[in-house]
Length: 447
Image: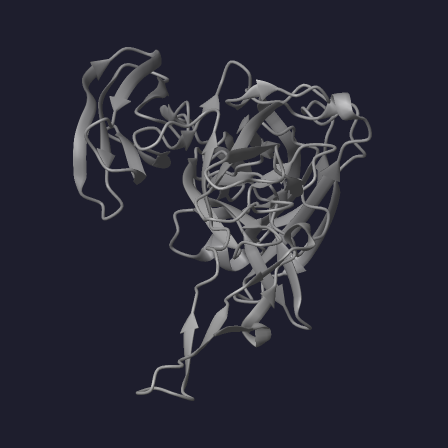
């Protein structure tokens, strides 16, 4: 006689049908086993089991995993959005039911990493199409995604979580590389400003924007030697920020690390969007005016009636009381970093006493263009008279890397090209040497 014991049954949600792992009670009537009961277990049907893969419409594993920046569109590669003038990337997940039971209401959740965002109207959680998967069937879900990116190449992981009413949750991922986008701004101060005691000198803050994001606000901190020069004011007249900007506000603050020096904090912002500084623009951001101070000790010292006050860009300074100021573009709060990176070139003011002969420059070294560069850049210099020159490039340790130009050169402007294709990325220096002048500047090679 056979009896069925349903105490081992489990309730299955699919279509409200109960599937049981049946235990069969077998009552043996034979004389050898009379009155004995034996359980025989029949296994349940296999559950749903889900697997998935992720892909994008702009990458091709395993060779091309980079979402590239395209200069012609000033955006990352992809298709044009229906909501605006920008590109989106399509992320698709493919789900397969590899189990023995139907999976109902299969849902896919896109887990976006940093530097990526969902397009307008997109939802992170979606039902796959179709949402019910019989064993062996396949479904998919897709999302439109914006690539935000940043100034450096980054590696990110696209992940999708898959769930259903019967299957065990599973997760799949796709490693991608987001290429760097142009977001560098070069800022520089001249090193050939000369002023005698009691005179006023004007120092232009020079810029060149290599940032695709429009520059709508700036905050700068510039340190100076207050024994030799005194800050007067900041002036926008004649600069790129003269029209459509609020006007520069300047405050002199003590240098918390050096009592002999002070710093001027200057900030300004746009009042209308079309006044923002666009990619490729260059010129003067703002003019700073200093008065050359009278210092009897300097006049009587052994400086030969000539000294120099360095002008330095200060990037991140904390003052007593935990007030923190960060030099940045497009940052609303003074303690915030901006969305644009800066490359700075310091300058100086040469100070003379009234008794000194007027200073005449004989050679002037310009900032290289472009900077940062990859792999080549142009270095320009100007000579007042014909002079023998040597133009060399040095690494960060001061070792000579390459001679870019050398020989007797006529008066006027000259250019030399430096190709760093065989060198590692990083900071390099270039120096112009004449019989009476030695000038050095810094440049950045980004691979």
